[in-house]
Image: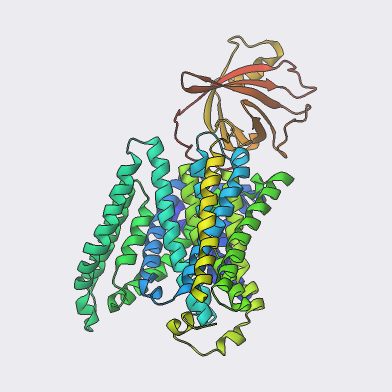
Length: 424
Length: 164
């Protein structure tokens, strides 16, 4: 039976540490979320466990971690629902060749490099319980993800979301996120089916049917349900309760199908009608508690599973550097080159590459899934957490260097379609 | 002209890498990873009788538990949940070595207590044959032989429940 007092104490410490470190990171021009991620790592064996092991043992006794994990999963569930809510297919319409080319290359290039890196990592950092195919697919998918929520926040904080650069980056990141989650769903189903009774075709078939049901049946129903709020009537608590219960049902369904509960949460958010006032109201209600209380718990749980101390030889640090370099070359360079080929100026293309290189929270979510399933080992998990933090941390200073805010904000806000179809 | 350039660029930057990914997956299917010895192992001494100056060591080890966290070739292990007993080591094919905490190398310092062993597979279950090599200069100078069975045998990737 988990100790309630210990759990509450943990949550209080985590929330305080996350907010404090987040504020410090904001002072140096970094987004709040990067500081919160760093706070989570600091609370784990990398810093607290190393510098003050007695305090770490008191704060995070082994038998308390399961309760912390459950809380973090609930927070992630709500967060992925919010990510799905933010995803608007209208972002993609009429964007033309720039966004299509850039988004597809920004997935394929790091995926390829990740799969090639897996040839080196597999004999060194994996074991015979994991096949090379699932290992390589996972490493590839982990390399190709972009943190759509963090990117959106960076753009909003810098008032860049309505510029040409911002709209293209947002659209590409949205495509990246959806694709990465679909890839991950397949990989999870593939791994689980290899070790459980449910055949893969049943899982994939069931998931396909479920997606079709959500898009073509549930989505129109939700639109009718929220129609009154479009006509100005404020939604009530009963409606909010219905949505939250449906969210849980969707998450349970995908978990039962053998994919992952977070995919169901994301999917449900994605099919919610976007124009409704209710969505804005719902987001406002859920966002604060999720971002302030629950997400830091996830960061702390990730931090508890991250041990930089496992990188205890020059060879391990070299592999870590290789993981980081592969991630940057695949994503930043790949996206920048694609955007340039599609017609953007070099500076804008480089800025798109820098933004797409932001991996942040989405990377941590995927890595935790990989570690839970045993696809990646603790050392590789730690290396990729370092990669996620480093690539997210570098975004703001690099962006400021390549495309200073003052130059971007002087641009007129142009219609996305006009930009996408401009002749060169 | 622009459309031709874009289609060509798309095929070069998306189509070709997709083909290469398939080739990489094919090439990698022949690779092998170290055997998994990750997990909790129950220890029993091979010799039923405590032997002379090593009786103390044997008594401590009998019925003990070795928890191994494996990252490919790299090992971390803890003895009987004792945080002070964390060891690091390496596995190469089916042979492994574990030393007192320090940089993991193929050869341990001979002055320190270290474990060396072999993983054997019998009827689908894995067993470790471990040799506990005492520290130089201690009262027990005989290697102690141990056998270990994994507490939970599963073909699925190990659920990570520990972190060192």
